[in-house]
Image 1 (cartoon, rainbow, N blue to C red):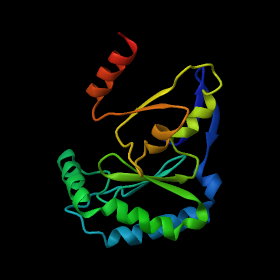
Image 2 (image 1 turned 120 degrees about the vertical axis):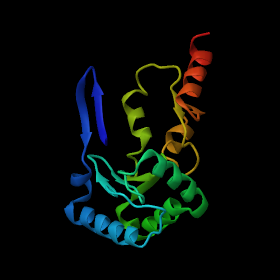
Image 3 (image 1 turned 60 degrees about the horizontal axis):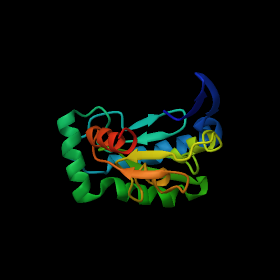
Length: 177
């Protein structure tokens, strides 16, 4: 839910989207998003289309309140109609001045956050700790996916997975045999 780094159970750094962007830019982004979503055709629309978090904004064209069945249906619909990729492309143009990153993740949403606040942010806290390798496992490792940057980062060994079971098997094969 945003950027909050912990070490030994204590918070060592927190980033605030509100402080970074300022209220006027947050309102600009939210107002534009709501207007855009009003014209998006989806099989269903439920609720909680925008979720403001400490370090990011999560946008869901179908709404985060959808059922699992509706979530699955939107995922199929989105793959066919590119709802999220089209919206992200428009937002990249509209908000270029804010230097934001738009990252598609999961089945129904995408995240909006300042450039550099992706999953690689965590590496600054562990890269000098003497680890010989840092492995990352993710399902959205493609360009534009919310795992892409850390998957491709030279400081990590990236693995694409499709399920928790596959992740467990890979970890067992890599580290426990």
